[in-house]
Length: 244
Image (spheres, rainbow, N blue to C red):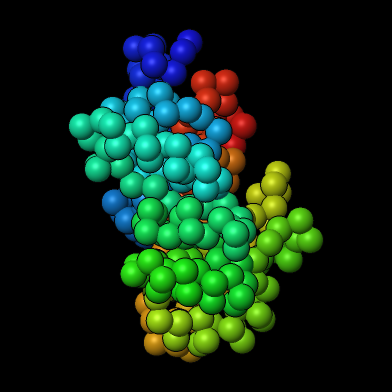
């Protein structure tokens, strides 16, 4: 099955219906509507042809973690009649020397992991005459393998970050431990509770909670996620829903 085949497009459409059913069930458990949950199609491991199939199936927001790949996909899509209808987010770790490749090109930067990175993004955005909407990445689970502010660090830094002139903090992002549903639930609940405290601290709504991926997005929704980032479950025919 190739990414540009009718067979793949039918797979994407059928899988989208399955995902939307799972989203609706999880949203109902948390007393919300499925319309309150946004799906970011994580396209970081697939080619432009797969993005086109997902677009045809109805997805409009995509996530990339490498600035070079973001630039490549934007260039390819700009040559189509509907390229302007597709939005990208930067969801991966952002190195300071790659900031210029991202500023002005994405809707959200999900991965502001330190005060210094926030300052650098604001400075580059000012030079380019743009205003960047960002999420603060928080390592709620305190895993050594994950980047981001600790909850204590983000509480100490957020006032300085929100005062930076060329970024707007719209929410928080986290990733949960793999293959551990109970720890995942605690991580997602912890992000929501942290958001509530920070919102009061700085007087901002911080509406966006970006958490939940292919294996754990239903738990994230139940705990308050507004944005789920789905890659394998969305794009990979070999991924089975029983893996969740």
